Image (cartoon, rainbow over all chains, first blue to last red):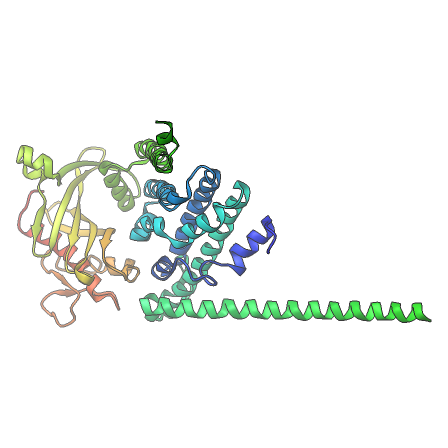
Length: 224
Length: 210
């Protein structure tokens, strides 16, 4: 069993259990909102805030909430923070609020948040739960931002609204383009992860061989 | 009696109620602090168009309840075949002279029957000639390709347009009787945008209150 500490939580949330590219969770906003990089970063940060706050509260109340009503209790907590995010965005960032549209209230039923509350926050201490919320949220933000930047660049020749060239492929702003981009990034993420794992294995094996050779050398000199 | 208070269902009810009450209280306070009023939304739209806050006089501001009470046309929305206009404001300068008119217009028949709502700025010269001088998007419904409707698209309604308020706009290339303004790959959303502008043109041509 993996030992829980901040470092493993960070690596899990960002890479090994990346909610978008590895667990394929939160697919609706991933496909619908990544037409622009700014939408991706906005949605990602909104989800991160809700994740941190809901994980904090679920972890604090984990011994108080009876097992039989844990899901309705989690949904109540998550819905509260989503409403807070909606109120804040509508007040201070109206353009982002209208860009996120329907997908903002839908964060309430986002499976990433419910999954982290159910599988992590309800079983771990407050500090680890908040760290889990932060890094899982950042992993989601990273995924949405890179996908948004890729689609924005190819569909309108711009990144974060800054025009770079006039070359445009309309397909990438469509729903089919969203699925295609998602597939490319999942494949790329898995490929990079497998290469890194393979290199780590080779490195570990080389170290093992080196250790064996050293112990064999020590053994022969002692025998002499 | 004690067994009732120790029962599981009592504990479950109390916990859920407690969370709901605390969350409700928190949201009530935050809503009071952060809620955006209609007035603030109008001020935002004016700021987006003029870059600064401007004094404005209400010509029309749709309010169903007030209209039912007073029967004043000021609170009624204007509707035609292109869509509806819910708000019309007269923007005035420091000397309280009319600078422009600002319309909140919703165009119908977009993608999947959805709508696009635009703020349309109408300037008036000394000869009482009206001219659209700025358009800002307010909101939309069911439109998925709104990023295609860029600044060039909105400028297409007033830049280099010779016959102001005479022609309606269309997103259909086959419709030669109206002025074509269409964003590539977003024909249906362009139609809703054109309808929002046409709604304002029809309002002025019909001689509605200004």
